Length: 118
Length: 114
Image (tube, rainbow over all chains, first blue to last red; front, top):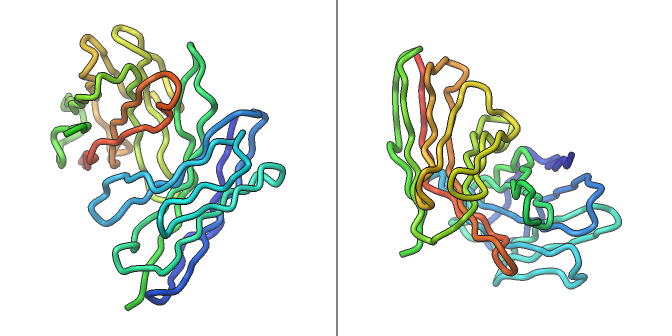
């Protein structure tokens, strides 16, 4: 079974600064996907970024980037030039590589509540 | 617009009164799933469906039922709700095959069982 750990329940940072959210995971799988989801006060789950384990290059999406360390089983999210709209709960999630018959579930961490201070 | 819809968005009910939360997606996705979100626990999978008429238990299935009679719909049924099922519920869908690894979530249903 897979586990995902987010060790920072809450974080806060000044607007325009850079913040890094931590995520570690445990799995015996070699091929998988990792995701960061954002949950603003509206409670909607919004995909921020995803990483395929077999790709060594770290994924980036505008101000969001990840530091994927496969050997260390670490997957941190960096938010640059933070904005007030980045205030949200952030969840790290793991998914095994899909197969024809397997459950394609997401295994989530417990989340990090991020507050951007004006 | 590609989306997953859930109804109702908010529901207050009493112990033992059967209820159904509907989920519908317009993306022709084969895979659909239900999660519940509780403080300090993240999201946990309740049930999933690989395709029409194919459903199976997730990690926390006790007290829930599902059905998948049509590809687009995947209702969650609580036949005798109890207070420990008070939670935020999400339906999600996903295509199958290369390049379709992202799951799309509905807006959530907040349920309070008294």
